Amino acid sequence: MSCRDTIHLICWYLEGRLSESVETEIELHLEGCSDCHLVFDAAINTLDRYFTTDRPVGSAITPRAA
Image 1: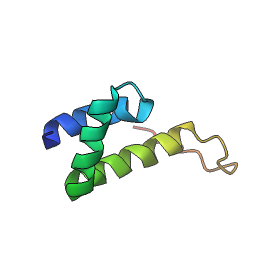
Image 2: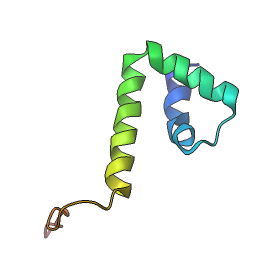
Image 3: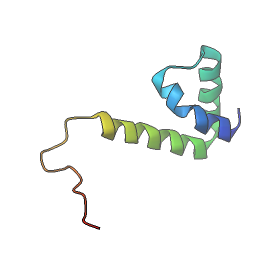
């Protein structure tokens, strides 16, 4: 699997929307490709931050005036 294909499928992979064979291809690619693994880690961190509701009070991002 190419880097481009892997990166395009990371969200679906994390959502469990891919076939077992495609998941295996992604996992094999991530084991050998540090660049794609960085994208994968960033996706996990972003989703964790977005869906985690245990943030301390006052830690929300305050929009700035334009």
